[in-house]
Image 1 (tube, one colour):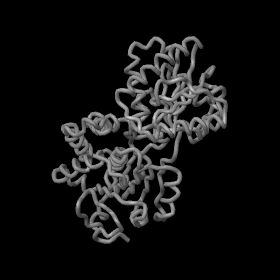
Image 2 (spheres, rainbow, N blue to C red):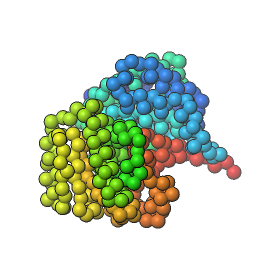
Image 3 (cartoon, rainbow, N blue to C red):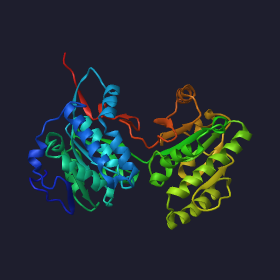
Image 4 (cartoon, rainbow, N blue to C red):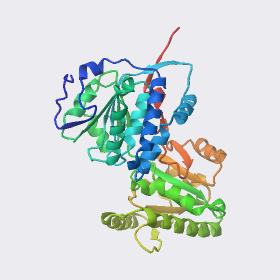
Length: 402
């Protein structure tokens, strides 16, 4: 049972600074997309966008735009239902350690679904977390009815807090690797509670060279690809590691040259490669070369590594590296990649491919994986349908009135 005062081992309470746990637990659930939550998120958006300190954090800017009232009302229309629904109660969110702003999106999903939220942020101290926590605190007096549903904590794995929070939650949301999920699941949850897990996933991109060869704004496309990949060092589950090229062979060769030259230019302007990642890329290539026939394309530096496949092995998802390491394969059609798709595959970023073709690719091959097919530049864009979960429906309970 959670004590009245915070007394866990080595836990930092980021928001609020003091909390009566027993009183907090007694709050009631809300309806999805309540007016008070929509207004709070809009105020949070405005406050963050006015903060000059976020200029160097594009992920916070993107998060702030996501929270705008116009966007939230659009999401409300998309997820509107005649069903009677209420939040499930207490959500315990475990945010990932490698994507700083992820905790904010998880929290927003919890608020929009009408729940109270305990969010464990990464044990690593990210400025993005502190900036958002500070903004929430500044709004807490005016929007107390909403901020009272928010608790942000930071602690190391050695703390007993995970067990305590798990013991009282109605839903436990775990963002992390398979090992992290297995460890957290050792802490029991109540009988009617359940886990929503976002485990290790693998993502790819498919590019139609016949269309790319005519792209008038190649650098803009390269910048979008940069945001999909380098922005989080390819650590996000939605970041493409495998690139599939479609189209006429001559067009593919010309398109690859234009595309990668533009990507390199953007990376050189924006990205700072850590020395350890350069070593990791070399190690990853040697490991991959032992397992399959590959060729490394010549490059002027370590910023972009391109490894070309002769054949597409079904275990290609086991060979990846962070910081700009890409495996490429030329396919005769998009259906050629269907045999490798398993439930570990999350996102497919695409360029120059029609929606109907993508739909037929998924349905015609009865794919066991790929939950998201989005244009290049949008693979990291958060949505309330993620990893195949409709978060509003999952995090609410349906009440039947006969």
